[in-house]
Length: 406
Image 1: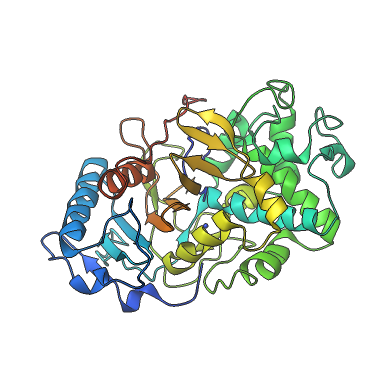
Image 2 (image 1 turned 90 degrees about the horizontal axis):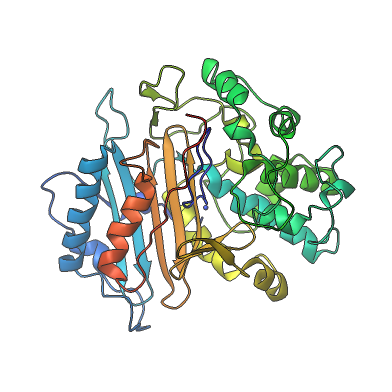
């Protein structure tokens, strides 16, 4: 799923982590650069019948596919990591990280990961479930006052995008407030106010509707139960416990160097602007976090296999319910044709972090624009192009939901 302003598209942020810098073994691939066999060396003798050996020939096909999407969707820069045990790895950076200077995209740059933040917030919540401090079927009204249907909407329905609450980021007043001053901070309470002035869209549990409001509420639950700021709790109990070294929950517009510049047309004028230093507080528990390629590769497996949770709680998380064609959504996580994880999008950036348990394959895509192409998210286009080559029976596709507010 993705974090956007006035339009919501299902993709990965779901967007989401180990320490070894990928830049040491990665190739910056520009037009005409030959594939580097060093990125395709096998790493362990665990065969898979469904995932190919990442040979130089396969790497060349992937290079061509990625470049084709870049050219068609006009993506400034992208980094891609693909791997599976015994099959080698494909790690590449293409294009530019800064259109003004022409600085190349590189695999060690920090990126905003948008809705992949949801995977961290929901993990924090599920850790509290494991500790017996909250229950998935508790009503949100037990923790937060003033929520429409708060006595009936459960934490499970919030995490599963089935609350019926209006998505604050689709509110016209919010869009105007944000785009008129992208540097301004928003509080969780301000975000909820944009949502709660609208009537509920449906009764709790009736259907799937991707909604950032749900995660703001879950973030407040974590804060109330733990007594910590959400950023501090996630950094300590999720990020650090997962062994992630370059992932953080910013409290403002801070963006650790080195980073890629991000470009968006979600602006007051509708023209493309550099959104690198825009304040992501409007996304908070739904979309504010920052990470890099190395950490996201690690997080893909941690998230999908439930390393930080008990098996019983992870099983609850992975109980997906049909969300869109070919897509099921669980608790802050989706399953798209066997690829489990999330995507992310917010002004200037998109991400896709997924793991396929059958083959133990990991795919991560990070790019520095959120501008859609013919109604599709570029992160989805990259995921589709890559999986058509490596897992043709499990092609990653996420249909866009209707655009609202335009």
